[in-house]
Length: 297
Image (cartoon, rainbow, N blue to C red):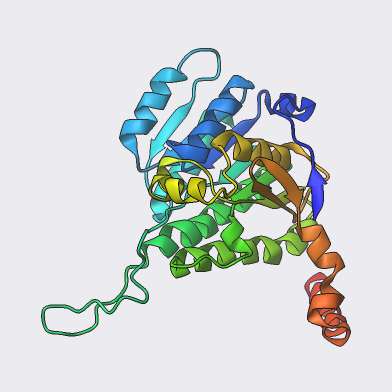
């Protein structure tokens, strides 16, 4: 891993002023902390969320100044809601500079391994709501972000909120782990294609370990009792802003644990021949290079 220093007063953050930012899942937790910080930096922030109560309270709190925060009610799992969101931001500001695909949910006690039966004794179909929001929602956000940046013909930055679960397994949460592995795969599969486009579109990912939010309140005592690393939402906000604004970062991940930041995609790529095997690494590079040439032809 490569350590990254991201202080709260990082000079780069001043570049957020006057940026137009669209963020999903902005009403609570990481999203709320990020909306508030961006607003304080002078950005024009709009967010999409299903939580009207907390969203409207935030709007009241951040209503002052020349950059009032705007709330769009809706679900990231619904295409029409996301289209309305993006079209609304563009209509209001004329462009979008930064998109933060942050919305996600975790279902405690996921039903995948539970043999839940219906009234007739048949196995019930498991709920896939976690995938609908945490993976499908990010895919839809990414699609609209890239389309918007292309249409504007201007640079754009897309940052996805992944998780430590994007890289390591977590017991008892198979669907959440699948979703967070999925968003990492999405970022990795898009980075080369976006780098080859004439429009400067960057994509990156933040992978937080445990974050103290209402989202994780049910497990907080266990983490404290076992002296495990705990992040605050403001820690993840710093990583999101760093990747959103730092033009040197594309196709990278900032891993966050106990407020300590590490870039891990670079080291993973550098050691591929070790963990994949030299011959397999050569074959991988050949397939990747041929795919790139085919796209250019």
